[in-house]
Amino acid sequence: MKRGPAERNRRRTGILVAALIATGFLRIAPAQVPLQDQQPAGSALRPAVMGPSGGVSTGHPLTTAAAFGILLKGGNAFDAGVASLLAGGVLEQDLYSLGGEALVLVYPKKEAKVTSIVGQGWAPHAVDVDWYLTRQKNLLGAGLDPAVVPGALHAALTVLERWGTMSFEDVAAPAIGYAEGGFPVRPSTARAIQNELEFIARWPTNKTYWLKPDGSLYKAGETIKLPATARTLRRMVEAERAAKARGRSAGIIAARDRFYKGDIAREMVKFLREHNAPFDERDFAEYFARVEEPARTTYRGYTVYKHGFGSQGPVLLQTLNILEQFDLHTMGYASADYLHTIVEAMKLAYADRDSYYADPAFVKVPSEGLLSKAYAKERAALIDRTRASTTFVAGDPLRFDSQVKVWPYWKADVRASATSARAGSDPLLLSSLGQDSAGVSKDTTHMAVIDKDGNIFDVTPSGGWVTGAVILGDTGIGMSVRGEQFWLDKTRANQIRPHARPRYTLTPSLVFKGDTPMMALGTPGGDNQDQTILQALLSVVEFWDDWYPNLHAALERPRVQTLHFYGSFWPHEPGFNKLNVEATVPDAVYNELRARGHNVSRLRPFGMSGCATAVMIDPATGNRFAAADPRRDCYAMAY
Image (tube, rainbow, N blue to C red):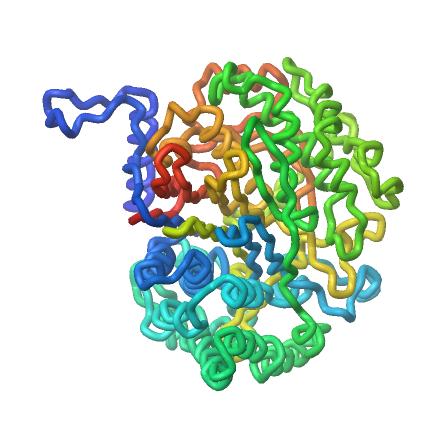
């Protein structure tokens, strides 16, 4: 998309001012600022957000407001979290819609344990690798070929039924209100619609949904209404009301069943079949959000919980296990030694991710071995502190696993001589990272909520985007294309199978201090998600005194991003040894990383993909902290 001269000038000015501030060239004389308003050098851009009762942080101010309103009405963290999930599916559709997926971690205080809810959709039962190859189809992330059953609503209503206190009607009210009454289009959504005009033009249902009645574009700040989505949510409310006499849970189940087993499902399947997509009613009726134990590890007195090996979440856990072998605090945040070490550790974890992670319903993953501290020590010994690795070789966790002793699938064993040709295909690499040719991401959002009782809700939803999702008839539901994260390769563990879920990138996190719950943390960013979470988490726990009590300061610090993996999105191209570094990383550090052999590129200040959002219970006071980094529209509130 071409920007006008005024917008380009504003953008250049903003970048210049940020750079001048970061380098200290733009100064304001202290005498011009009242004493009480003077801030120490290096202060956070956003104020501390703290309260005694609760906190919310999400990817959109109105999504945060929806959750916050539910807390103020007496709802718990799970009521508020589901409200944010539903509202975000209306408000944030350049990042996520109700036809996408939602991956949730919950900590109900009464149960005193963390539970994982896998709201990742699955492939239709009629397909496998051969189905695609014999029809010369691929999983390019647009249209109906990479479609999977929407999982977000099943996950949301599963959480509400099991841990909430309110009705579906109560928590859906903000989403229905915005869909019916309208809301201002934010700039990123307006850009996404304009960027997707060619795709939208191919699908009449998308044109009706995303364009004005005269076919023109919505401009940022204009009001858009989404009556089709509102009707679908209202039909679910009607089902709840009809069943509510049997109790709150029965009403919520009835609302969920109307979407997956009732007339809404039949309308979605009818549209899919009319467009030759291999779905039938069984694919929707049999779908369920899996409820399971999370994966976890410890790091210097903290316990970190993630989704299991059907996600990329354990990348964070493996990386932390490796980094436990190094004194990161002494290195200093964002020093050359520090950045080099965390990048090299992530490279090792990504090689294991691309080899071993897959839907555990179909693959026996050596999870015990992958999370073994002894295995991590062995992997850490491979890091050369003076030189960037150019290989991409998985380890052998089976030696550390008591259950899995045979691995029948592909295992990463890429040597330096094989990397240069594959890494040079930029359009394919961008696609593999979930970006179009202009670098625009099909991306994600995140919601974190904590309430007065200490319940915690954390979700990373995605999919069903403006970018590539087909609106299913008159339902207002954009069909997830998360199937693009499968492989059409029978040697890969993460291959497409009937009713398999792709190894997803969505990765919420809960952090305990010892056995005491402390923080929920997550971000958008595709393959970059656990890199953002890792750097934000280390900023918090390794450098506590540098940010406390303004959690924003921990999230604003400069970041790097390795592309040393196979992209999770089709066509899965690698970016071996590529490293992106934000402009706020000093030149001396940048040059040292380059000298160590990293293929380094500069990004603008706050230019990294991702927007960390977090809520925290302060271990010292019990107060609630909330924060959202400035890289996007993320917004935090507390009370």
